[in-house]
Image (cartoon, rainbow, N blue to C red; front, side, top):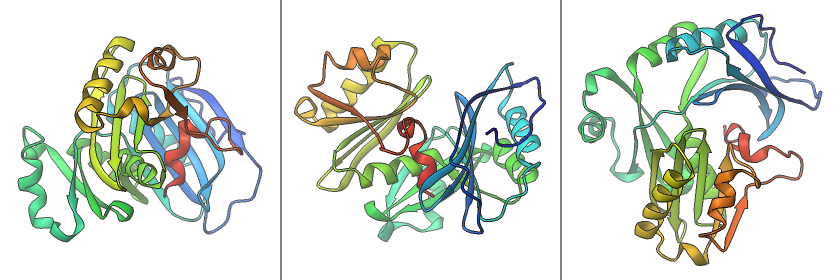
Length: 267
């Protein structure tokens, strides 16, 4: 069942999921905007009840994409919390005991060219005892605030860090079309997280292997968990099998596409 009623020529419905359970006051509506399009999901108790994935049929700016999203979701009449997740690129982590809002600006100065262009949000990752600081383009953040005033903004990296902390495995790799995010932990402590743009399988493997050789030199002997827009028969997955003894796509018995939408269940 499609979520919402879109007649926009700029949108294409790619995937839907529904278990037909009624929505309640505890249901959360999660909108995720990433490089592959956007999805709208309703979750409850960390389970996805309904989901619609949309693609953009024409090139749009990020602000125009948010306008399309707002036009769609504002037709919905739902209770509970509203969340807007965005795959922004610049993030860093600070130990909880060292964090204060006063250090956000000097910390992020090293990551972005002009801090005046950005709005910074911070979110606690309890299992890692870290605060994740994310840089949002101000125009994008203000567009969300204006068009989706009831939505709490969160960064995709925050959800990925929570997923990584919950896994037994130490290496997690998230694929979002042309972006790879790699997370490495050791003894339940975060070692490193970084994102890279890639254009083909060779790029993907280069960035991944270079990162792991530095932060997880025994990666060949470890299990690497893949999540995001990937499957067992994808060219990337087939290429990785040459370099890794054990790679697994994150799975859930109740949902075949769990690896693609697992971040939506972390809120």
